[in-house]
Image (cartoon, rainbow, N blue to C red; front, top):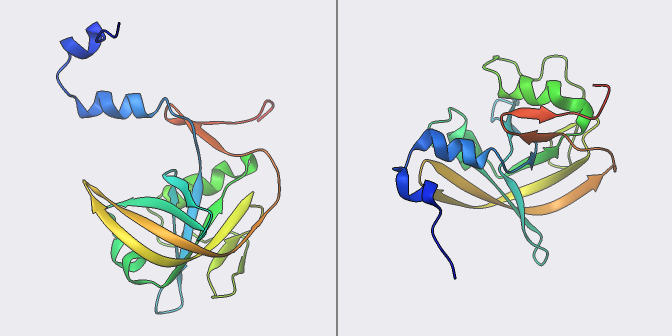
Length: 169
């Protein structure tokens, strides 16, 4: 017999409560990078990353509709999803900041299409910007992976509003 939780019956829907509940799902942390028409680079921290399909090779991530970078990512043909290692919490913070130049002090190489690949990332996925789906207050980006590489190492994990770092960090 299935019964409803007393807590769900007593509570009206609350956005803060919803966010707190979502924070109980541990996620990896990525930095999505791309190049602007001017040749400068843009990057942002995202934990909304997931695989979609092996054939064709597809991934997804999402970006808020109020993000200043939305027009750039919507219009660009390519981007790179950099999966951060446990040693790269500072990169997650830097690319989540409001700094004008988030690439300041960051080591990177360029992908085949000229987009930044962050040095030391656990994995990276160079993607063609295949499709976009507006849903709620976000846009879901589906990327077709054209090239990827990885270096097995402990991941950077985000849970309950904070990074979970390995012992001695």
